Length: 79
Image 1 (cartoon, rainbow, N blue to C red):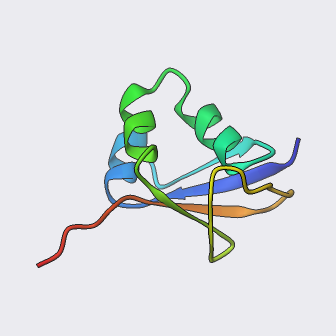
Image 2 (cartoon, rainbow, N blue to C red):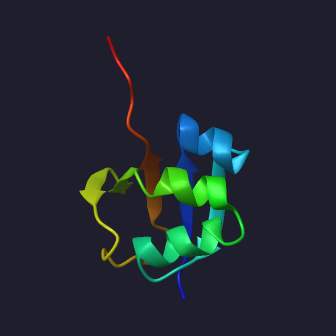
């Protein structure tokens, strides 16, 4: 399995307790399941995130390759 990096932003960073993590995963959905296993709050936040793969919007079925960078962007409030 390829090793990839996930960067957390805003509420995802808070739920993860860090700004980045690395994991082995074959898809974004697999990555989310891996990093949020036994972490219900992180799983909840990631379930509403938008994901970018190397700067391009991606969905949970998007395949990952070694060295990929995934950004987890939760909804932002604005005013």
